[in-house]
Image (cartoon, rainbow, N blue to C red; front, side, top):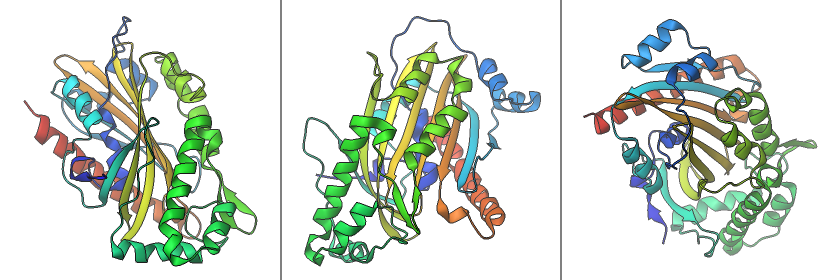
Length: 335
């Protein structure tokens, strides 16, 4: 049975991945990485360092590498037990109770792929897949579009489930190389796997100096999966801009050099967003922790005409969501 997500995530869809401050702890005896080391690596100013260490929220716009990308780094201090945060990440306990995520199900390799539970209204919404074409705003490959074009209405949900299952299996087997391209028309394709790889090559190498083992996991997954690595897969049913949507998320977490490090990767989203990835660190700081989170999302919606204005609005919305998230965390876990 698909569970209700009023216990799954926090904030709006983009803000939801910020729950990645919750992770699993593995006992690895190595020197602890200090907040100062990470601050310096990310080029925080002295004022920003001071603000974070004295309890203020820092939200920074990170360098965006294309007109389709939105990128933000968030940092704040939190006084709570990291074990509690990790357990909440595993259980999917929410900070607040969003309405945009309708339901979720953890996907297990040992059991059958979750069966989509759809209301009559949602089944009606799925009819847009029958009209998908090579210029569609649905995130589908050429082969997936053709398969939907030849279907009867009664078979749409079954076919969508087959698409989700196939994409999950391909990603689990081959990682980012297994992500089928989205067809955009006029012989254009969006390569989400390539986007994630560039993310790793351009952004994460800086962290490889502090967390080499975790960097290797992200770079070579699933070929490199050391003992102690924790991971989970989640199928989500949600609404994005008022439309029914489906997404699949991959969570990875481990402890290295005394720091909880985690990745959340949305390796499939049915529309609006192409995908997103968040790298999060929970660094020990006295009796509490410093959370540092870098989130990058790709969307065709912020590209093209008036891209600069769209990015400005997108960042403002994201910053508002991050602020609400920060306030929720501090309220729930203050001690």
